Image 1 (spheres, one colour):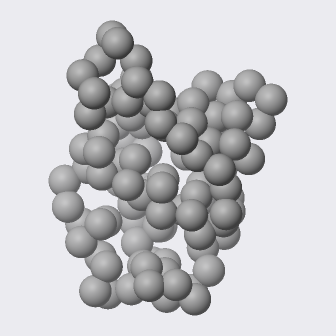
Image 2: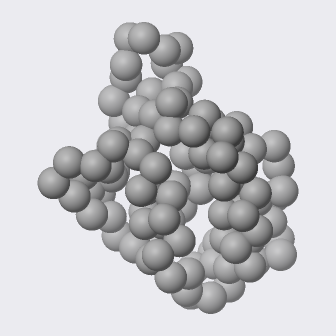
Length: 106
């Protein structure tokens, strides 16, 4: 499959989390506010539990480590690369550089 996933994750795993972001013409914007919303609603634990079943045991570190904004974006990037979706980063001057926006085109 890939070096990360033991079996193919359904695209719905990605779409469920993208639904928390801002959507405009199939372009999803994920930023620090989106991350905080996911944490506040405790959706991160459910999402990580489901997503973790698709990662190899040796790659479980991505799931088991502390859920920060940076680790969240890393997981999104893994899924986008797997599904061959275009993504890019944009810097918002309201936040430090490490909290740059993650934009996905579906």
